[in-house]
Amino acid sequence: MPDLPQNPHAPQVPYVLVLDALMAEIKAGKYAPGDKIPSDRELAERFKVARMTARRAIGILRERGLIETRWGAGSYVSHPAGSGIEDGRQDDDQADA
Image (cartoon, rainbow, N blue to C red; front, side):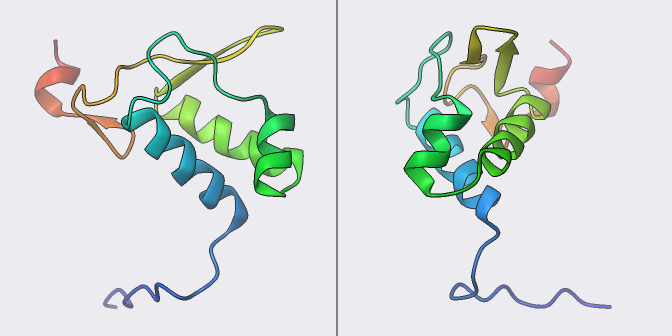
């Protein structure tokens, strides 16, 4: 079955809005490697979403290796912007290094 085209005017799932914004900010260099990203509470307030929604976006960034979370300290950027990471994945040649 072919994929249906995406409607750019369709509503987006709330966690995707948070995820896309954070990924764009990391890629743009707003948060450098080692920088702390906003907490789930701060993200929830900023995007007017539930804290669990913000946590889901943070969890996906962590799964993709873009951030690391330190218990009791927060979440920090783990990769430099423009290091071959596109959409949260490393290029094959860099993953083998």
